Amino acid sequence: MTNFKKTGLSVTAIATAFVLQACAPSTPEYFQEVDVIATQARTTAATTTQACNANTLQWMIGQPESVISGVSLVGPVRVISINQTVSMDHNPTRTNFYLDTAGRITRVVCG
Image (cartoon, rainbow, N blue to C red):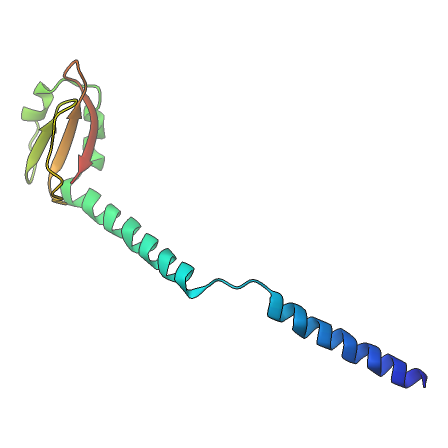
């Protein structure tokens, strides 16, 4: 009788483990796809940053707008003043310079 109780206890423990495993949260397929999309977006952002070399131009932040004409840049350039309306077209090879009210560069990005 003692062996039966131990076996019954073992069966109960195993059954409980299966039930708990079935209740364990798993990552839905949708979230796995979102992670893939986020990874692709990060990769694309890194590639476009290299395409216009915005990383190498970060030293220009805080400089006056006149510095832009003295630098040799590959690809199109767009200078955007504060409150200026710009088109939403995206060109990964274009370098965008954002200016503040004093005409100083505040951001250098691709797009």
